[in-house]
Length: 210
Image (cartoon, rainbow, N blue to C red; front, side):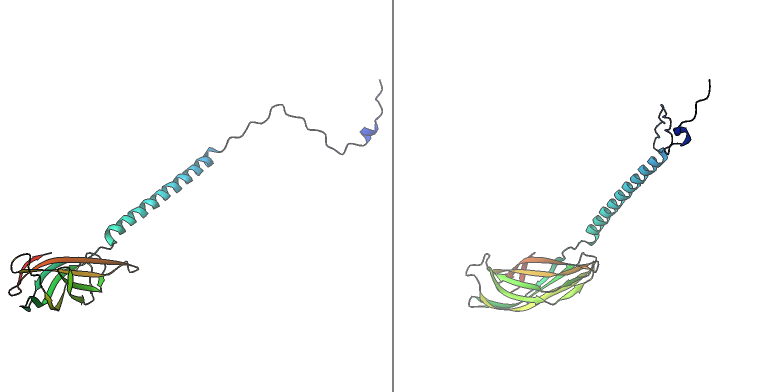
């Protein structure tokens, strides 16, 4: 048999490459790298632990600030009440009233008091009033303060609650401000009320209940 002559297709090769043979067995799927997946999980765990730690530290600081630096009102302890001048006649009395107290500042910061006052009340009416000079009490310290004023004559009850005894009420009010951490200012106030029993004969103090 003779060799067939070449055709035109054999003389001029095709411009397109011949098709690649298909592989009946596809390549196996690649599994994700276990090392990289584990590293991402560790990073997330570290971030969660850091966040929890910061939250706990914030809560601890807030609790510490609340117990150590929270502003507290001062305390007043009335130490003495005096009536040095007393006059009684024609159903009216006039006298000089003096009251002294010890004020303690329980805060760590200084307490600046101002607009403090001492008031005297008889039968529901104010018979005396005075402002207490402003000042400052260091943190954790005490200070003696007081007030003294003259009471103009006023009529007393025809029938006192107890024979020969006149009862008056005093009200000492101490108010001011406490500066917390030198940035925050908080206003605090304290009041001490006392029932004073006064002898209608000579004006001596025979009873004091605060």
